[in-house]
Length: 476
Image (tube, rainbow, N blue to C red; front, side, top):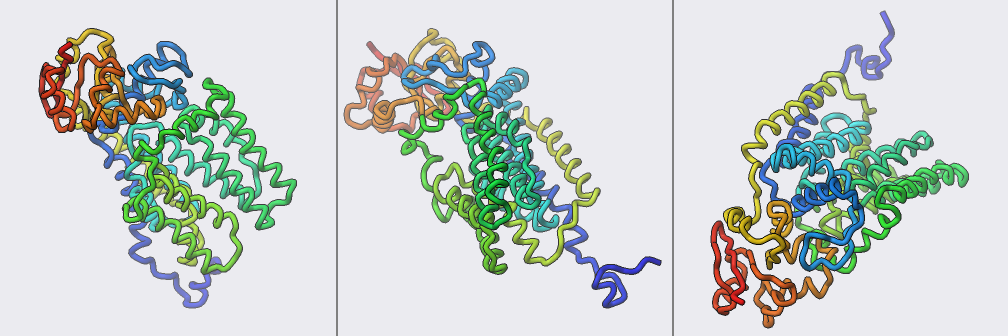
């Protein structure tokens, strides 16, 4: 009979009791992952999703990655398709399955984000704390899980952060991050997060004396080559300037505003950072890598609404390590039953989504859908004064029409945005906006303050009204 090696067994002569949490803990991560897949299912309500499909269609037809916008009637800046890879996928899926296919992509992308966070945390913590952290990250991402290419950034941030934390442990350069960054740079404008995380970890390793100057310089080749790889995507070097195109108009974009401290998403992200900080204080050691990553995660969570979830994804593996340290137990690899449960749950969740999507997501969740026939009857090239939220819907559903505003805000001048806001709000001089943009028709929510003013002006005639929207035609 072999000698017992567990100290608890040697001390008591018997194996330690298995807690109820240990018995069922392995079931919880699959359960939370199912939530990632199933919770986002529903009609497509993100206005950006519609023009992303249009971008993919245009690219597939023309091969243009940088172009003068052919769709909007008032766009003034070059359109850089720096998210072209997922946009192509969205177009192909939409062409085959319609909006229900786009909704399925959202659920699949959300599940992949959850799985990436799960793998990052499970490597560093047991099943039960991993499930808890997965739930916190889901809350932090609640405002960002939409059918948009940003899902790629969330998933690859989890993968990249985990990879660099492994490099911190073993000192090995993970060169596969270079082609991953190339794919990332073809998918979303925030691809640079990966090289930045790498640089932060390398600096932390040097401060902790885990890496000499020479070793740190060798490791720094990975983020440097990753940035170089981004320069040779089909977009070319203009990829580096595209994020700055939005800089002048961020004040008009809700997701680039500072989030409220009482927002549940912010509280969840802060909770992850707090767990890492508490562990640092308890250990009383200069863990510079954790400190720097926690500061980065905190800054992302508090600075912009769009990056709250990103901060949570970066903080998640730090929080996993912290919880496992508090438990004072080594991390056991996921047992086969847990891995099987994760795979089966993911597959079944996607099957459910695939069956339900046509029924629950086949029609748009926004736009003047009741006016489809009337809008189809308008001459091709008709310029429409419209609500910004409906711009992408018009581009996709009625490609022959030319809206004057949509959520591609970076393509518009500040002057145009001011004029649009004044028009919708019926401010003094609102009449100049239709003249300036060349609108011959307007399709607007009946609740828009400008609609009663247009009705009463005598310059606009009601053509049709349905579903809370009205279509008007200039009398001239």
